[in-house]
Every structure is written in structure tokens, then in C-alpha cells.
Length: 144
Image (cartoon, rainbow, N blue to C red; front, side, top):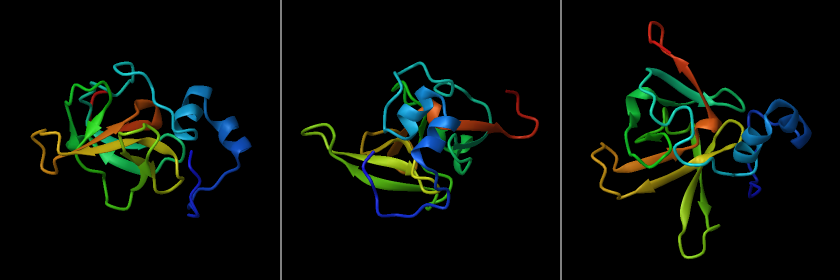
């Protein structure tokens, strides 16, 4: 991951992150990896609830803003609150600049946000998130 000058509310050493996260979680959350499409546990779920950062537990998205994009990853049209995520320029793909989305509480990589794709959503944005980067907290009374 590209280092930032920001100090996060949840700050841990690399060794601590490695001890707390599985190797796959670490690769996505701390090394800005991407899980394969159509394999994540939340890609097609309709369970009502809140999606939280798997690394630190900060609340990021709600099921109310989740939509079917058919892209292979869970998609949302808006984060839970404007300051729950942060945005960084991602130039890792030559000729195809993207905007990386990270957890604002711990700096973990979540995915990317895209605009102007024509989805019928209120924001015309697609927050394309890695399932492995989040944990779903079902609403009370919601089936798992």
C-alpha cells in the first residue's frame, strides 16, 4: 500500500496486522490486493445490516445502499457516512487511473470507487468493495 502521512485512530504494527488477519485478508486489507471476482461471501447477499471493516470494525456501508452491479464484487452507491472512508489516487494500472477506497479509521484497503458508469443509483457511483475486507453485521431480525 502507498504510505500516507495520516495518523489513523486504529494504528498497529505490520506484525500485529499479520497476527490478526488471515494471509488472504492481509493481502487485500494491508497490501491493496483484490480478491477474485464472484467468490466473495457478500457479492450476492441480500441480508440487511451494516458492513464493517474486517480489520478494525469501523462501520462503512449499509445494505440499503448495496446494489446488483453484476461486476463480481459487492457494490454500494454511497458509504455509511462521508468520513467513514478515504480516497486515494491509484495509478497502479498504466493508462487507467482509479480512486482507491480505504477505511478512514485504520487505512485498510477496501476497493475502488467508479463514477459515470450509468447504474441507476442516486449517486452514479459504484463503490466496488472486496468482500474479504468487510464483515456484515446483520440487522436484528434479519436472516443470515
